[in-house]
Each structure stands twice: as structure tokens, then as C-alpha cells.
Image (cartoon, rainbow, N blue to C red; front, side, top):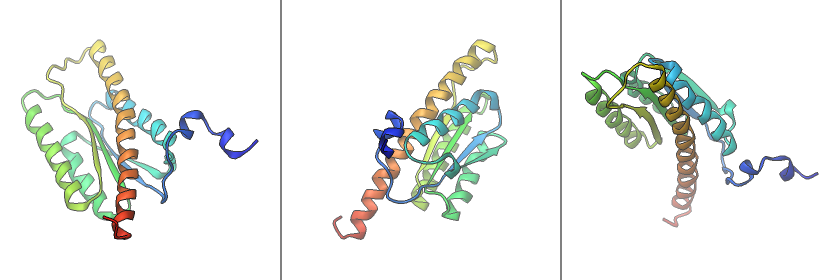
Length: 171
């Protein structure tokens, strides 16, 4: 049996990275039971895309408002090739302000540091703390984890190619 037949079909369909990748995952602990499926599905999907779970570090913060500062500090370390943020903003009085502030701040960090930052921060307009709604959002975060892992891996591959072309003087 050769090495390629021992891999799962899902792992075989994704391209491999030329250089090792390291990802930080910053997650709000507010409504952890609802947000946690994002981390779990992210970890599974990122592994299928050839980034080992041992290369992904989880950081928990109190709420979504605290995510951008942690993302900025992590980006400045230059230890990570990408950073993912996940959180649930539910306070209707400040929801719009917090969500907008968090997303703008994440974009600012990404542009200033050239470390890609991905958001799975959700701010539903109508959140009621019932088991039915919590189940709906757990499923939403599980799906978001898959999507953000795909976006993360595809962006890292694209940047790896682009930076190679820039270094070679092609672009």
C-alpha cells in the first residue's frame, strides 16, 4: 500500500502547503456552549486541508468585544499565518455597535499586519435564549466552522502562491 491510499479521500482532494502553517483561533467564552461547535468543526476541516490540529492554538476571551485586541497581539507575534475569530453577540442594546466594531477592528488588524483574519462572529437580530434557538445557532456555528476553515486554508494557499510570485519577480 502506498502513502496516498492511506489518506482519506477528503484529505487527498485539497492541495498541500509548501511551508508549515500555524493558526490561532480566538473564541468568545460568552455562550460557549453555542459557539464551541465552530471550533470543533473548524479543527476537523482544517485537518482535512493539511493543517495539523497541533498547529492550531485556541484562545478564549470573555466576549466578542475582547476578540480584536487579542487578535492584534497574536498577529504582532508573527507566530501565526492566520487568525480566526468566533463569537456570538446577543445584547440587543449594543449588538450593532459591538458587531460593527469587532468586524472593523479585525479588518484593520489584517490590513496592518498582512496576517489574514477570518470572522465567525455572529450577531443575530433576534436571539431568544430558548433551547430551540440555541440548537439552531449551534448548528449555525458548526457550519460556520467548516466555512471559515475552507476560507482560511484557501486564502493561505493563495497568499503562499502570491508571495512566491512576488519573491520571484513575477508579480
